[in-house]
Amino acid sequence: CGLRGQRVGHWLAGARREELLRAVLQLGMRSAERDPVLGAPERPLVAQAGVHVGPDQVAIRRRRAEAQEAVQRAMELAAEHGNPELLPLHLLAALLADREGIVAPVLEKVGADPQAVRAEAQRQFAQLPRVSGEAAQPTLSQPAQKLLDRAFKEADNFKDEYVSTEHLLLALAQLKSDAAQALLARQGAAHGAILKALQAVRGSARVPDQNP
Image (cartoon, rainbow, N blue to C red; front, side, top):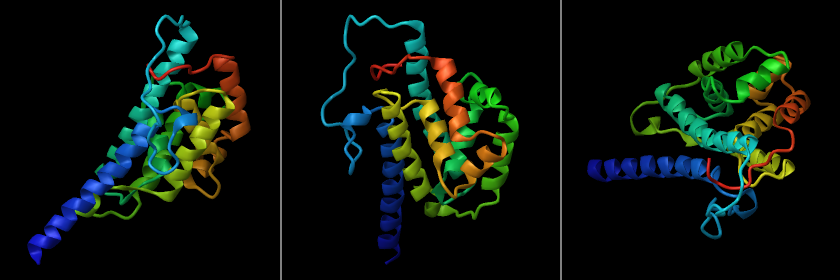
């Protein structure tokens, strides 16, 4: 019975890792081709050869890769703190951990203090319930799944084919009744203000392919 329970525990931990990995992989897929159930692309995605890429597009492609890294870092934060679920708070802190990314400058542009936001996010998820053992592998919370779904919609609004960090930030600001959204709102970082700042920063540049 003990061996069986151990095997089930390992299987559950693997399922959780697979669930979170799937969330990361989703961010590297075209928003129009994402499978709504499995999060898998309908066909292999390859960059188009011979397409001229300007400096603005290079920067945005880099942020697409940073979006995947942010979700991975958010997973690590949840695991490090023994939190049973990956929450939008973890992702907010992970986005602000990248000092060279676009998220902190955009928040500064709307009058928010990125370091204060990050510190408060960390303080809040440090107070969340903790688990240990096999249960310490965090699962994707419902708010986090809504966040990812919203990020794809934000990418569609920009006519971008891939999700990048600014889409995640906009999605965070749209989550209703969520601690991360409330934290941003207290700092004056509402969705409309962030959107206006982003439009000024990136202009009409788009994310045309999956290569950062």
